[in-house]
Length: 614
Image 1 (spheres, rainbow, N blue to C red):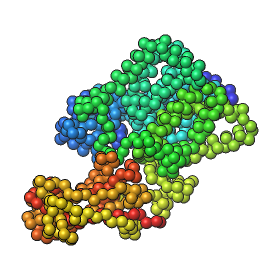
Image 2: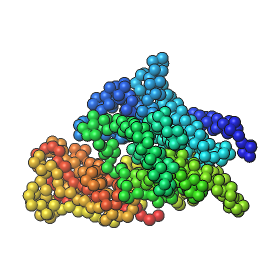
Image 3: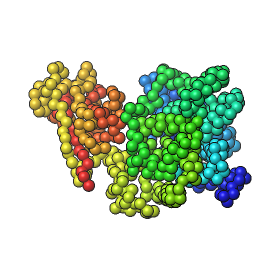
Image 4: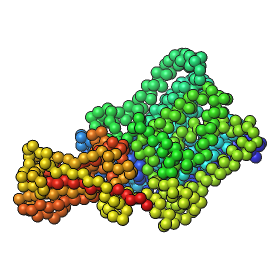
């Protein structure tokens, strides 16, 4: 069939792929589609159009919404600002793409017994169907792009391998992933590529306007997608003469280019206007509520993104090695596209690698790179063109590896589905120990890193697994004022009062404490008061500091501990470090006086516990 494939056969096979995508989404759907990150993307819509409270000024109503609709993981999708209003963690682009299906769900709720609250089943099913629609749009336009460059046989082979031979299938068609940004961005990039091709053929208004809209939406979904502008900008540019020709073309279509820029700016400005209304500033980091996560462009995790067993792209999606090799064939056969696609890929990889949470939470492989598969599909096609002209040996070896990598991808998705491969935290030892297995083994689980979520909740330092390696002390002997000679040890203790709220701190850079990815801190201090402690409030505070901003902030309230007046009391708690954003981040601990008359504090100490070697 492949040898004689024509357009009709190609279309039939695309329809079969689309049918499977629909089946897979329905078969692997979850009980509550509007949850986790999707809840954050979506929240703009019900807050604005149902509750009329985009900044969540009504905390009681919002608490009821959270309690009713969100899992027990709690609300992490936004945070309060200094204005008292809540700003969403995610930009609003995804919610705009949800919007048509949100309104469909709203209308459907009128004709059912479900409440019109923005979160009931009609809304969930409508947005779920919307995700499938965007997946199908992506597949159809991807096919159109591939057919522009390749014959039907190669176009279908590329599309088939991208959909079934990479993490695309799991991350776009299973476990409500079609509601995530990588699905809609993949669709956006297929349309961007297609419209870029058509505009360079005809330079018409009916092409440039939708191109501007889709580019603007992609940037509004994820600001780093500004890299998408490289594709139309460098299209057909590969040497000095072509650059001059491109500049002349842009000048001759000046009105269109100005309109394109204006439309993109207007779409992106929706987020700026939102920031201004909520925070008082046009420019605001929507991840400001968590200083432990952000974009560090000058310290990317490129090696980890590509090759780590935790989430290495080429470890869990090895077939894309051939797409990278395809850049060589593309350079030899179509230099007019080479620099646009290569520049896009390199800068996009840089952006993806620069995110401090480079593993992108629970997922199979590097989900953040899925939108780039549209570009890499072209290079993969050119790899096959080059392969046709290669030696017999190279054809045999390449064919064997493609079949092996394809089969490995399907098998590893089965491992993921059965829980053999967890969504995060895989080690090389665990990977090879479970290679080829489809059932979980308790002894294999010991090769996985610690579940830090469970550890943090337990507050328990297991002496069999952790060893005390360092001690950090603050004895307050350096105080020049606000001290008392009634000390627990030494000569001085610090006096905490309404006039003196914060004690001296104990702090140290993480890199000076350990080279491990996490440690336990056991933080303790001694406190003294002549009056009843129940009438006073003191907090033992600890956090990690990144460039003056705290993350993983935790406290111990003295009112939760039984303390006796007229004597020195020890207060303490254990703190597990979060994923460290940068090794120079500083650990801090101090005491904070919240209420009462006077409390003496002394001997602030932090014991550092590192994980023992297995």
